[in-house]
Image (cartoon, rainbow, N blue to C red; front, side, top):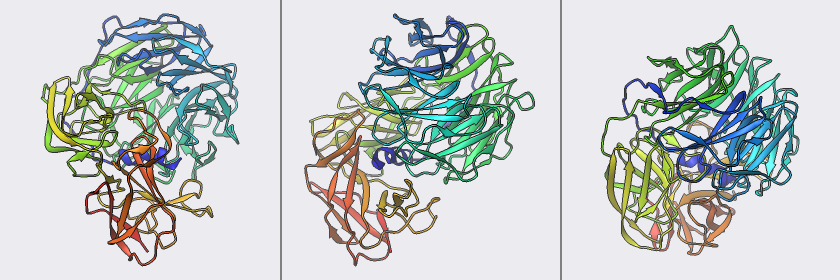
Length: 626
């Protein structure tokens, strides 16, 4: 279970390249605004017909329907066949609730439930068996994540009328049941809920913006679907906070929060910087002025500088405010901001609606019954992408051989026009960037001007193969050796192996006491780690350790234990150690289990090498021992 969640922590531990650009401006898309139902209160971005083009689903609270719009790739939209869907929605979120690779919808209703609609892959939807599912009183916003680590998407619902959050655990077929201990108490009148890993234990946590109490509640997950308040929670935000989002606004690798404060005495955004233990403090200069009654906030890199920015939907002003980040947690209004939309915009979402690689905006305009789509004009100058020599390698490695299904990094310049991260759906195009390996589409996790992280596609070819990066500005080509093995150990920093020590006595610092993170004892890495000792049970992580039984296909969610078919050996301080298990436990991520670490391996940071099929991991990796 831990490996499923730790995958995201490992793959996001890279440097983000920056690219200087001009101030962004926005213009309405052709045909915008688009008429929808009465009282559109929220919207969600997805790809509902599988054509690689962003679509929209709109929750019309007054008419009680969901409108589905299919994008045309140029920023225009038309209504999908079969809609609208009468479910009485307050808000809406996108997920894959039955594991068929097709995007589904979850919508809260004021009558106290959540409707789940399963997609058909053509833009149509039907109710899941058992839908709707009970929530609390007047549920407003809903968020999607895997809260119990079983590889199945779950739901968290902010119940404004009952001052709590309902957690619904998915069964993988589109059905849901209430998690043990749910609902979980928060502040007064929670309006929205966001998901992040706030204490860096690899388990998803929750944050709610509480309109009635003017604060933010942080709930830390236990990995089984349960939650408890973080020490110091709740945190003061501002008057009548509406939307809350998660980002990394000071580029320290720790999740932060941004909260839209809609109260008449506020009209601003509070930025709360995380400390990595579940605590938060206000960023220097926070709160930052927005428009009139900002009720929704979203994150994007709108000027392509590799720094996250914010956009607010200002209900009282009929516009959106764009706040550009400085990389230290501070924000300033963009030169041309605010940008006009419709009457009473209650929600703003981010997506690339015309495929140019720049994040665009969509707002749900409650008062005018429309959706406004604004296209971002801040494009990177037409610079041809370049792949560095030897720049296609396994993540955390300088090796020149990669394995099918392996997580791979591509280094170069102009590889993307903006910095973007997937939402867990294994896209083959992200922010206008796509990659092929030996002519087969790779699955993109992260793209930026200087780096791409991807999962290599399945392939039976061995030897030198082509790698092609395609952006709106052109293509770049290189070669890499494709082999049966491309082993590399995952790292916490530049040298310390990523792994955990299991604690059967519940004494661990993470996972509800279930484990500690291996590393130098203390907090020298920025969070608590513990050096391993003789007798400890370890789980180490890596990539590229060869074929498995059963076979695990690339581009799909996986949670299980598929053993490597070739023997994996460890060398710890030049002493051979045989793992009890080595194999895939998550998509592309191998877990290497050591039961009862032998004595006599040394003290401090000692060298660690793994080998499989006659191929060794790169040198320079260490494990901390005591």
